[in-house]
Length: 259
Image (cartoon, rainbow, N blue to C red; front, side, top):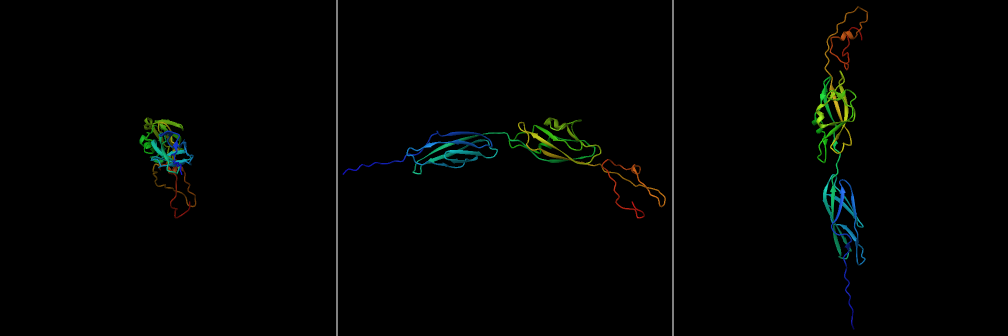
């Protein structure tokens, strides 16, 4: 008797696309690419991400590849996709990813300045540089005062500025704060920074702490009659060094009489 033998061989699945495939995305965004494959034997195709990319993370579901770069990363990356039919047949494809740089807004921080009553306080560029950071290594180009102090005046030389005035780095040497006359205490203004492309998203606060001038007081001598009131008025303070922020307080009471 004669027998007919037929050898059945498995055919590996194939990608429809040619390797490598390219994906171009912007920094801090998610990109996707749809891959396709066929199997001559009509076997079920299994999609596998062979390893995670070095500079991001990827997923694959039914040929749809999604890729997310690490935060603030730009440059190149790559990932390898494998298809198999679970019968020993497989194929691989590489995706090269190009992540385009996108400018990130700068970050600024709050701080405080100290000054003295009735004395102009001058700012320097370093006052703002030291509280400015930019992940893209951009430099500080301009500042903008967004909210003026409640007490005193921000000026360029002797000219008061308005809120939301843009001030270049070269002009900061002319920027100064003039406290209100005879005023001491704490007030504040807010500012934004510009890196040449974007302004900082959130403003920072600068406190101006103005030390009042010390007062100079002396002894008040009053002469009166028995059983009569003695009254005090401003003339009793004429030899004192006071200002509009000064106040008078009795720290002890007389042993004979009341106030």
